[in-house]
Image (cartoon, rainbow, N blue to C red):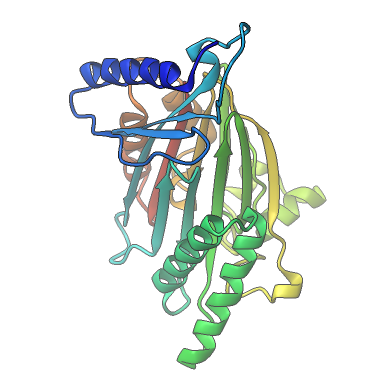
Amino acid sequence: MVEPDEVIEQIALAVKALMFWNNKSLWNFDECLPEGKVELLVGHFAIGLADTPQYGDDAPSISDVITMIEFGHLSHCGLRRALNEDTYYGDAALGLWLVADGMGGHDYGEVASAIAREVIVNETRAGTSLTQAIAVAGEEIMRNSRRRGEQLPMGTTVVAARIVDNQFELAWVGDSRAYLWHQGKLAQLSHDHSYVQDLISQGTLTSEEARHHPQRKMVTQALGVTAPGQLDVAHISGQFKPGMQLLLCSDGLTEDVDDAVIAEILARPGISAQECTDTLVAAALDGGGSDNITVLVLRCH
């Protein structure tokens, strides 16, 4: 029989190896969760051990019970905006990452994105599903807007990911995006709630034409703007296997960096998730920095 303490001891050795490999890492053993679940946070690494009361003779190896996620994160106001209305969140213990892009042209876009972030985090901690947590955030933004008595409603887009074991769930509203990189290929998992995406779906506009369309930034769904009964919280789920990368970003990245360049940066060997994130933001700035830019890169090891 392999006891949980023996598995945890093997994890500790793995963590020490990571600390040696990256001397900037922070080793945090503070949180021991019920039923033998232990979360270890090591710098931007998250190592999760699923509930393991006991194993028999067919005990899995340490590589089978550990899911390790490395993530990088960065937000920049861009070169043409004085205010950054984007926000983001990443919590490996909760298994939640999100990007929210407050809508420019509406009052208090930065307030709307911050409300979305806080509500989604709190609802997720309370056990609410990701799609429902996003819907609740939209309702709270509307209530806050009414209390302020503003002429224009506050609004924000959002894209969020939950990762539990080797499964991911994505949910989004608006044109903030989620991509999956695997084996050299980049796939956009989300579909934009936008005017130009509707035209593409109708076959009246190509993807390349959409990049230059004067109304390309017009969204058709947004938290705080779209009525609760009409809100379309889109979602998708799948496996998150070693070697895969998830990218969550605001449209400040995709406005100035095309998918081919994004794929090339994600494919670069020998750089950390944080270095990859920094490079993506730098590419957006080099491309004009026309909007706020927020990028999260998650890697499964």
